[in-house]
Length: 190
Image (cartoon, rainbow, N blue to C red; front, side, top):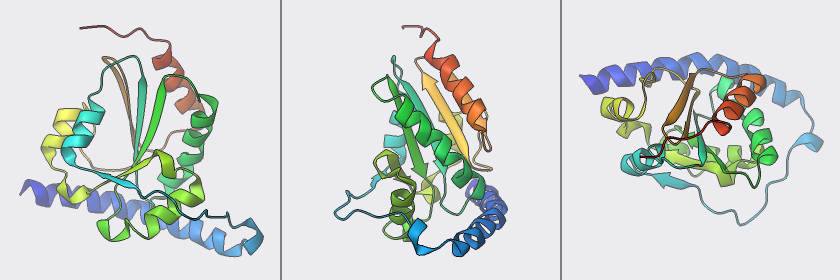
């Protein structure tokens, strides 16, 4: 029963993003071939994480700021905010910050659409795959205070014991403020 409810929530979230993606695809079709980004050959494959590996990653507590963005390629708000995260990756290069994108796309897209999308967005080296069909309510309750899997995008930030959760699309200003606040916070050591 929980899987059915969780699947319904995920389906609702996925459906709500579809309209925005259709609008984005219409805009892309107007662009000429000159604006199409080049895709390099011999890319490293995207890494698929198990639920346990994702749990371990989300629970890391040290002086590094971990920013984890859950997205899907078909989700318009997700696609819209990715450049903001990409700017922060470049800006914070060399600082104790790790920004990771977690694709919740279906497994059937893992070797086709997701790699193509991550290459076009320039985030392949910062993206991992997670099989959404394996996520259960325990995953959400073990890792998050607020997120139940009802919608994406979702961003989770952790530095030591301090966390921040954002459900829905963030503006670039919100992202900058949240990262700055956590970067400047002192972690409690246990």
